[in-house]
Image (cartoon, rainbow, N blue to C red; front, side, top):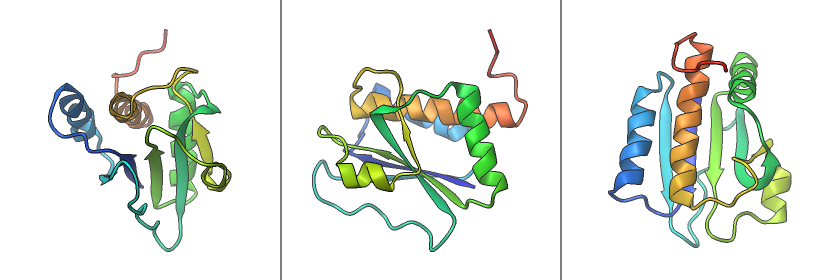
Length: 141
């Protein structure tokens, strides 16, 4: 299953970009990143079938790392070809976008800048795929 991060804003160069790259390079699953302008621009269309859409949203579910891993595992095992993770701009997502999503995912109740949200998502995707591969990166407390 491909993990597709679709984010508003360009990450450019800097510590956030280095952190995102560090985690994404370590993921054994196929990963794709699409950057959209701060406003306008169209979200890339999903594959003709077999995709799920996950919006990063402060009002979403606060899944633990194991829960996220199990959700990815279930989608993969159900034949989902692409998990699309959308990171919005400053105004977040509208009601129609939220309603059309398969999952609203929050990294706590705080609002995060999109560059940090992208880094946190990259780390959580690496952690989730590591859990599914029985890699020792994730340690349960």
